[in-house]
Image 1 (cartoon, rainbow, N blue to C red):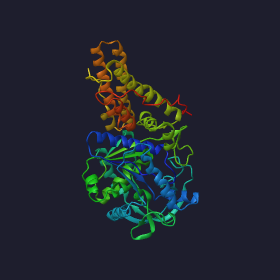
Image 2: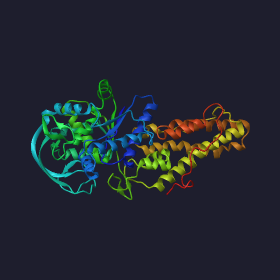
Image 3: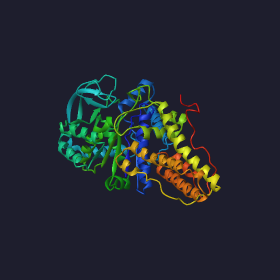
Image 4: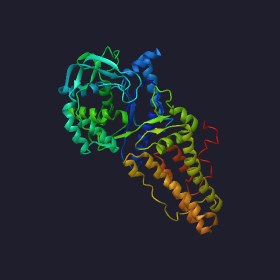
Length: 470
């Protein structure tokens, strides 16, 4: 599987919404690796946006300085969030990106032409709209722009795009987003402006081949990263030959990935992605989290305060497949304490304590196997909350098994059968939990490892009673 996230603008530091997409991608990557499948997990940053230029001007610093600093913050999420990405591309510094964008431009030149254009432009979205306000909620007024641009004959690909999606050669999940894209396509596609004046872009970006007065539209530039990051044999391995090429993204950018990007590839005669998974937004107080909103929820600060397990678990256990999710630190703490400390942590501690108390720490054979964990089906449907809940059914089943069998009331043979079953369940949990909470899974695995278990130790602190809930 070739698995990619979107590459965000770096006009500011990352917020919790970026963490959501990265963690979701990380779960998929770890899950498929655990099944023995080859995976390339790629993320990165979109350095060439006008938003970055304007943010640098507002901060009174050179564009390069701001871009480098904020891009480093995005790449630096790897450690705090326990991410396992294989590749991180920056569009302003990757050695092959500009040349790759130029190659795509030349390959689509038969569908490119110049004309004058006038319209309302949202800098936040980096796109034109027929009227205001911005449908994605950016508060800055739309700018009236009039200039000579290069255009791409998007309208020529309307039927091909509709067939591609209806046939599910390009699978879009969830279905509501698929229907949204089809409705947009079948309402009629207009040709797309794919360049901006170099003057308006302040000279920042990739020049249009043969036309230095224009720069390549930032989305055309950014979408190309999915192939420009693949150098040499990697392009053939991961884009030409790979059976599953999946893009993860927020709902605000689906049109770019499900319409513009496949059309670019069709025009260039290149292979297409096979899947698009769309998540909705995180909100605070009902308002979408954004870099400029003032309520961005810094993921690194949250990890510092509550730990990576609590942050990842809230993102996976609480965010629905469809619909926005409102974040508060109190909800994060409550979910971590209920599931991790009181649920999983208490289960493992009880089991290890009983094995030491009744069997001198020695692990007997399992008496029976508890219910299987149906994680694969949920992740295949890109439903992370259902997948996390599926793992938790084993925690709940094991806790019920403790109460049902009451090993402390059993004979020696009964204790061996019950505790063997429970240790096996905890070991299974460590394996199933690894894609979701790799750090916690390692602690659980260590707690129940070997023929003679280590002495019991608490696996999770209770955040509310530790005084970190607010």
